[in-house]
Length: 77
Image 1 (tube, helix red, strand yellow):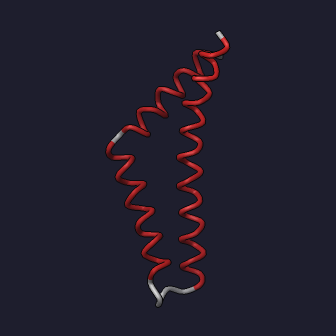
Image 2 (tube, rainbow, N blue to C red):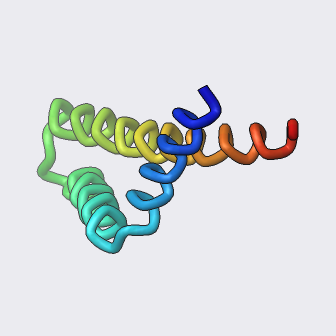
């Protein structure tokens, strides 16, 4: 089990540190902000942008959680 936690944490760290991932998340967030700032956007478009922004945050939280799980495992030892 501890090996699974370590492997998942290593993959999460690699994603979070990767320039491609960081750039993709940043670009996607900016696209959603642009929807909110566009006065011609529809309610549906703003709702979708809100959902996408929330999903991006959840993905980042999930990856950060995997890293924290490993840190907690190390502290137990």
